[in-house]
Length: 100
Image (tube, rainbow, N blue to C red; front, side, top):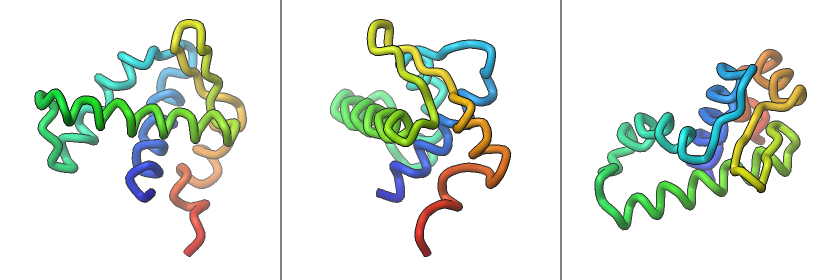
């Protein structure tokens, strides 16, 4: 579960950095490559690509359920919500909201 929060934090940061535009799933996946590389994942491995996509989808769904992003299912574009912007500005992300 910790990886989901790290990934969700990064997605929220990426969307907030691109506040005037939406990012597709493919664009987010590409921007998340450094996160997966630092975790030791070989990006070129097809079986690991499926895992990467599954973890990214899980994080996006989590963010949408929490109201931090808006996901358009028709075109797989995500954008940060006002609640997401406030979350980033107030406490720097999701990790700070986890129970200790």
